Length: 297
Image (cartoon, rainbow, N blue to C red; front, side, top):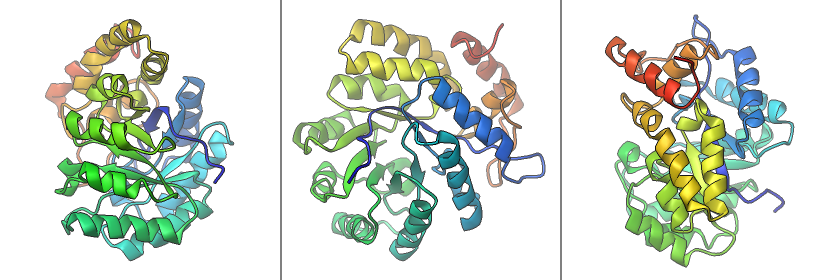
């Protein structure tokens, strides 16, 4: 397996849409280039932040293809490929691998609520079916089930399961995974507010929403943590705090897409059932962008 170990800041990429609702390929290419130029360590297209839930398979594959083309091997591309139907998850994984993804991001099955042994069976079936390394995504707030630490550690024994994006918000659970994981297995924060704490406990980085608008700062935060300079890392964490809060003032990716529109990087177009940022929150998001230097006052 030649894929690089995942560490540092990975941006959960927002997908730009045109005003008519199509994939905005030009804006996506420019956005990927800007993210890499700003210092992010890997990119994650077609996750929940990328509105994968409302894409056709053809659109999903196209977004990943564009991202792969634009990265041109400079950073890993971790493509979302989740489904709560294991057979569909395998089919989508094969599509994403064919599109050139270096890794695949799979959320624990939503809605079905399988028991822990079902979660294990789901991920093992995918990992056995494709050669592309798998990242487990634990996000109970969206899936209605938690991947327990023991389950993640059992999955980590599979040679093709190489990382977890942990968005449970449970630092004790995340710490248990960090303490007992194999050395090759990456533990990534799935919650921007907890990146500092997860990395202080020995985690490897973050799959970030806030880095969509503040890539340089989030990349710096992970680099300082990795270097053990937690005084400087705390200062960056505190500088990011206002934007980190504003980025979740409405469900993700509504605030992030509004922010990128304010920055002139793409149109503020989301697909139903998502709706654009409520007008009353626009001053909060704008002020937060000023606080991280993404906009001038």
